[in-house]
Image (tube, rainbow, N blue to C red; front, side):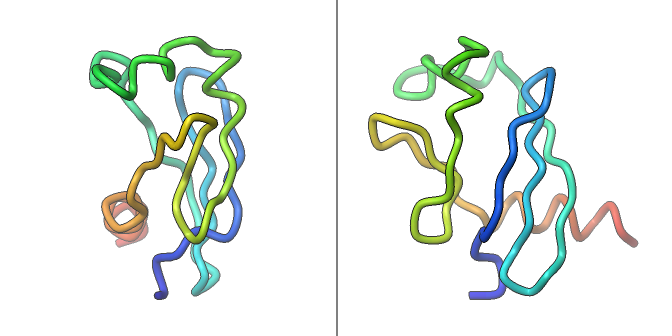
Amino acid sequence: MYWDVVEVKPEPDYRLFVRFADGSGGRVQLAPEDFTGVLAPLREPSFFEQVFVDHGAVAWPGEIELAPDAMYRQIAGERR
């Protein structure tokens, strides 16, 4: 899919730089107060920095994943 993630880099303050299969990219700001349940480990900055791409999704160890479609919409909306 065009919104599959091909590159992700952690940035300070729970931000990610994300590049998609269609070549578009940008920064996504995540909110640590939303890191509850299985996402709770993301509150730890050293864990957050372990982000990687797994089959087109943003992922962390322990099978934690975020769907790319919402990130794509956020970045696409910022370019308008």
